[in-house]
Image (cartoon, rainbow, N blue to C red; front, side):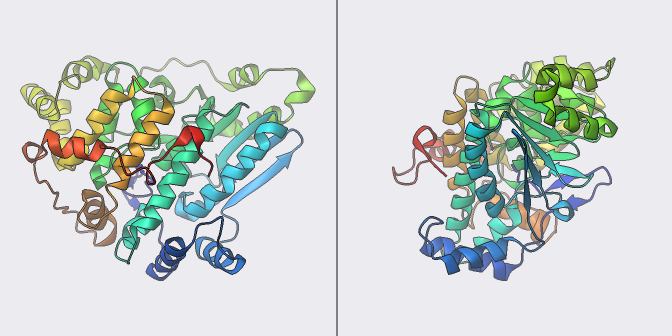
Length: 411
């Protein structure tokens, strides 16, 4: 989130790439605004201009005040509800307000295709072509990760209805909340290594806590999970058929009148499930191969397995950014022993150092979303060339004024 935030490189069932179209002119204007002023100190004219740039199709976030419940609707259905800076800036303050005034919060996406297909990475990369273009990306990720942390520490029930594509930044808006409701239409992935990034928005935190080495597998390969699999993997907490969502929301919003608990209502709408996890036949392979101490060893172990599944995963890994693979593995491996705040703070260091024109992030987005030649030229070009020194430098502490300090931060 890649994340993707990853309105980027995520293929839907028909195999088409999705991303949000952001004009270069608009991107330049936002970069100039962010380069010269903060959102807090900007003049009303600057704020209005920036808001107009970010809002092309009406309100991109709908806020509904329903008694003692709050509802947030991501409202960019034509862009698969891709997350941008103005949306983050609208969601954060209302969540803070509702934390003290509401009994529960529901977040969902408009339309039938997506909850949120990710963050608008194309606009972040286009901005890097402008003077001080990295300021735009740094601002977006800083505020996005701050929002992720708020969701992860929210003291009121937070219910994410992840109906449709849920990737990258969309995962960050949902997975850290207490309740995540998948449907048969849910399509989950963290595909960032394909665009030279890493599973961010707290990916190093939640992927490291999945069963065995499943999180490492999902984070390195970008493997997609559909429907009930999202529940069986431990990413969703509940599964409800999409045709029942309207009734589910009605009952949740009427909670104070029924005396039921949130768990009782969610369980009432979850059908009896007798499904086997689609990766169950491969879990022992995932455990044996992806527990290797290095990415090179993972690939070697896969190569020794002559199965079609193993060879397919070798092909997938060899297409990914070599530096992204090593950075992602280290982040996920170490994330299990860290808090959400610590994981997000480290991820910010990693993403901050990716905001340059000579980064694999720039090259990956260029190749897949801008020029669309599908031929990224990674630097370093091979796993062997990605040294421990290179990786450790990406994890290194930033200058104090650039660090993300979540436990004492405000958006």
